[in-house]
Image (cartoon, rainbow, N blue to C red):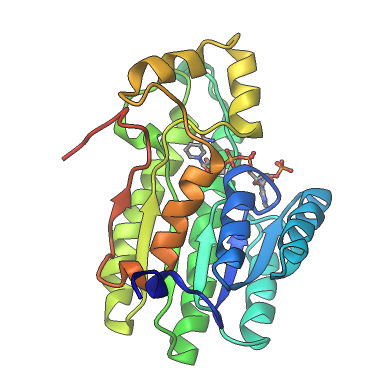
Length: 257
Ligand code: NAP
C-alpha cells in the first residue's frame, strides 16, 4: 500500500538530458515505476540506448532529438507528447558544465551556459505547464539545480549563476502554479559520477572527486541512480504536499537550513 504512491502507471513523463547520466537513470526509473517516458536530448545515439534500456525492461519510451535551448524545438516535442495522451511529469535535467575563472569568462561562455542550463529549463517548464493547465492535469515539474548553489566554487561562475537562477525559477513557478495543483521542485545534487563529472575531474587531474569524497560524511560520491530516486519521489504522489522545495541528495556535503 505504501508503495502505491510511487506507482506511475498511466502517467506520461518528459525527460530532458535523457541520453546520459542523471537524465538516463531518471528516465529508466520513471519507466520502471510505470510511466510512459518521452526522452529528449541532443545525443541521438544515447537516446536510442536509453529507449532500448527501457523497452528491454518492458517499459514504454519515445525519443526526441532536440536542443533544449531552442524554444521552438522543445515546444514542438512537448506539444506532441501532450497530444498523444496527457503530460503529467517534466524532469528538466539536460545541462552542461563550463569552467573558467571570472576574469577569463567570455560573453559567449556565459550566454551558452545560461541558454542551456537556465533557459532550457525555463522553456521546458513553460511549455509543460501550459499543456498541464490546458488539460487540467495535477502535474509535477522537476528542475535540475546543483550543489553549486550552496557554495562558492572557483571557476564555476557561469554554471553556478545558471543553477541559482533555476532555484529562483522553481520557487517562483511553485507560487504561480500551485493554484493549478501543479507542483514545482528542484533537485540540487552533490557530486555524481557521470560523463559530465568524469570530464571535469579529468581536467582537474582527478582531484575534484577525491575532495568531494573527503567532504561527504558518507565518504562517497553519488551515482546517477541516487538522483533518479529523488526525481521519482518528486514525480510521484509520495510528494503530493511538496512544492517550491530544493531537495539535496548530496551525501551531506552541504547542510543548509
Ligand atoms: P551528462 O551525463 O553530461 O548528461 C547531460 C545530457 O544533457 C547529455 O546527454 C547532453 O548531451 C545533454 N545536453 C547537453 N546540452 C543539451 C542541449 N542543449 N539540449 C539537449 N540536451 C543537451 O551530465 P549529468 O551529470 O547527468 O548532468 C545532468 C544534469 O544534472 C545537469 O543539469 C547537471 O548540471 C546536473 N548536475 C549534475 C551533477 C553531477 O555531479 N553530475 C551535480 C549537480 C547537478 P551531450 O552529451 O551531447 O552534450
